[in-house]
Amino acid sequence: MTSDRLDDYVEAVLSIVEQVPRGRATTYGAIADALFDEFGGGPRQAAAVMARHGSLVTWWRVVRADGSLPERLGDEARQAYLSEGTPLRGTGAVDLRDALWLPT
DNA sequence: TACTTGACATTTT
DNA sequence: AAAAATGCCAAGT
Image (cartoon, rainbow, N blue to C red; front, top):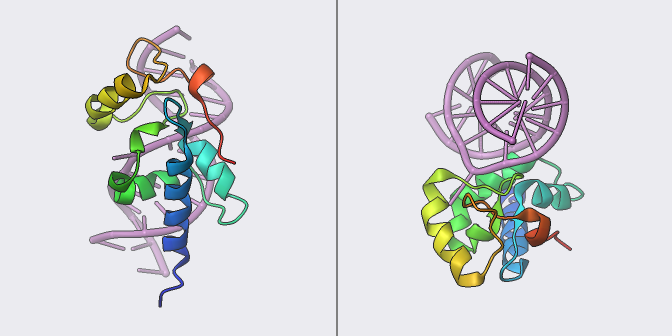
């Protein structure tokens, strides 16, 4: 049936990603924490959603806890960071000290 | 039903 | 400071 809570979780994650301001970034843990009230789960579930539907959103605005991101996407994300002026730390990772955005 | 895999996080060497 | 080990939770097989 249609009331799949999984799809609902997916939309919730994508919604948060779409809400991230330009030039800013958030982490999987922050998203998981924000949705933990309603769905629980953990950062891995948020990541699983991105792996499935991440192509539909600004996935480069979602990074790991240390500001770095998956090797496979590093290249494409770098282009986006340069375009949006995201604060980088020098090694290609986002400087979360300045760029970290927490879901509302 | 049990095992393996995964856009992760945290703690300990 | 950097790397390895452990923990977490759910989906896929």
